[in-house]
Length: 275
Image 1 (spheres, rainbow, N blue to C red):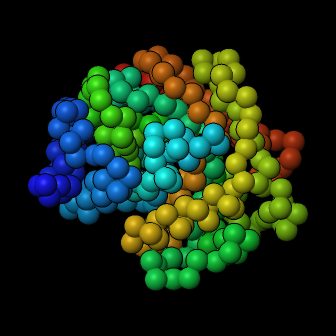
Image 2: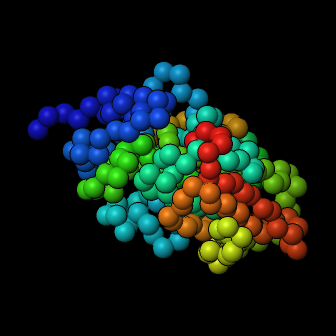
């Protein structure tokens, strides 16, 4: 069996995204057949010269166990890149969003307050707060430049997940403002997604410290260092598929400190902006 060339695949994916092109789906089908292949391509993308990683996201980590539905044993790891981070209210280029996956997810985000290296001991779930400097809310638009309407395995569409998708992030609170009571309540915080003004997904929640712990474990397993100041997106609290040009998204999160307030993060899919 020929050895798989993940670096060459990463170079093609990166060039396709930079030039607003596509990578052939059949070619990627032969390369991406497992969780190991997904993580390997994402790591090759991470190691390309000139990339500017700002953190990590955990893929297919939503409440109903999305990774199991596509035959994976656990969620996968994808680096986040500076060029894909968007401000609250951003307008996004529809090309890769409407051409392939087109899934919007509402997620909690954490900015780390100190370094975590692969050889470091992972604390227990309750000890994850020592790594948290900031808590925020995010919309993630999952997309790919494999396609545009590529048949075959869904797995190949995850190979450039971190390189191609967009994250709209809104900082909410610094960790030093949290009391022990509020820390205990954070895992129950919920989010609801609105599509074009109507509620598309009712409020739901993920146990956030547990998900942050799993994110650190998965990143550590792949041999990445998490530098201080990294943004960690833990997994979808709410999601909606089938986006199209002109759609407007708004996700309303319960505020992690002010119990009667919400935090709203929004974006639109249109001709303005860049993916």
